[in-house]
Length: 294
Image (cartoon, rainbow, N blue to C red):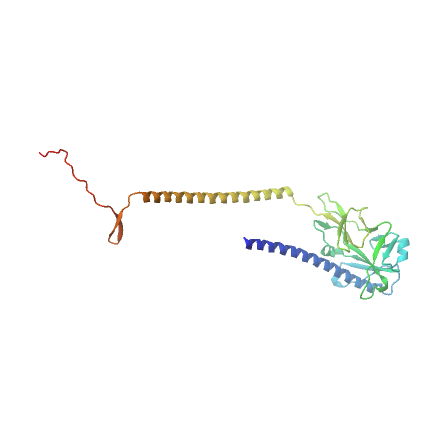
């Protein structure tokens, strides 16, 4: 019993550790990708002008992705807002810690979206897009400074391209936010193909995956349960019958032995090589039927 318990504990521990390791691996891959895209974006920002979006040149192994960067004045972002890539930034946004110029990196993961970003029970219907703000004064250096954006007015709007939902079911599309801090939030679209956010991170539109036929699955499980319970009850019944049969036989043998012990005992004699029971010879004395002789 102890070995079985240890085995099940080991299996559960292995599954938990595997899930935890997979989660860490996904987070590490995302961070590495962000750092790599930021590196190529910094090259595109060299000798650039403020307020102009520049597309980064990516290597062949990142084919299908897009990265762009813009140098943005904080004062202009506060007073007028900005429109870059898929994002619409409203006025009254201030960087924290404050810096006069921002370097804003925009990403579109394209056909790599589902490789880096997944949400259980849902499917992506649009590419994953994202943005991150940095201090532009040291954006080209090895150590860069991420900057938070504090919104005091409207949220940031993300505009996605039109998409088609799979036919056959009543699908409901929802916005998903993968925040920088690792949290995942689902929300309704504010307009068709439009989501909103107050945080930096990555964004997409998802639909819930169709659930399996629960009724059919329950029927299958019901028959499995009935079969297992019936088999267990049958096994217990067979064991009980075997025990009763053995007990009855043992009881009969004990009765026979007891009767044998209470009966007349016989002497034994050897006849050849066999040991045989022997009783004392007693002849009945003859008695005349008539006491007078003829």
